[in-house]
Image (cartoon, rainbow, N blue to C red; front, side):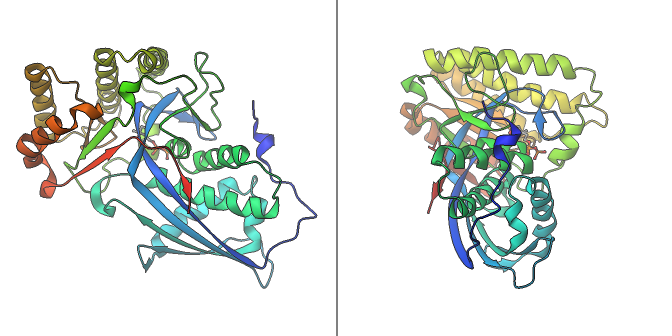
Length: 362
Ligand code: DP6
């Protein structure tokens, strides 16, 4: 088992390259058992598990060149979808501050970070998981350049560790198709420090599992994740929620192995609603669903009843809906979405995705 100390970069005698470039594509993910509540430093209050997505991703190119004059500060320029973005810098500087202890070499370089998402920026889809994991992977490519002896396994594990310090859910955006984050007695090798691939054989029904994201509200998040997680401090139901999530991990682990879709649907929908219930019962309180979110949920339940289908929904901390279903129901469900659900999406917009295998170096 790795501890924090295993991730501290040590290398006083290394040769610093003059310049270089690295390029990673990193996926977004959708949690089945939700992470909601954390303590310092980015330690989750409960274990979470997510499907890695295939089509929703971030591509990041990191150019680095040795600083002409040594300094202790971070030198970076951020280009997002072709435009210089000054307003993206503070978040990245904060990320660099949090990870500097583990990648001390980052003060040696001037960086140019070029990044783009496969999904529209203003779609209400969070890009922090794919964005920060792609950047963490690029930094690990530099570490590999400085220390060629590190293994690929270490590179990916430390990338997840670094990404977590930027955004918790980003720890789950390195591997695939199912990633666990948070130490759990029933999941071998699980850790609070980084995400690990679900370690047991997954039932074939979950292969290429489909996720269609219905964009009900494309606006900026109403509640930032920092505010959201903080709502769990002093929340009356906090401990029950963390216990419930950890029990759901045990149950879902069984279901993912035995293929019991009815139990899967029940667990996944209950998790989504529990997440929103936490927001509704905190102080300040929030309702993040929109009327169209509820309309879609009702339609999903009706369709499931009438056609004996196995579709279900999950939610992020927002109004958008992820519809999850087995690959073999794709045709039927696509017709249903086109026919009955797109009218509830903003600008009729939705994104078809499915589970993917994780990040790639380009
Ligand atoms: C509702 O990972 O965005 O999507 O660690 O503060 O960056 P920070 O939070 P973040 O929280 C994600 C919350 C969630 C559930 C989940 O993905 O597990």
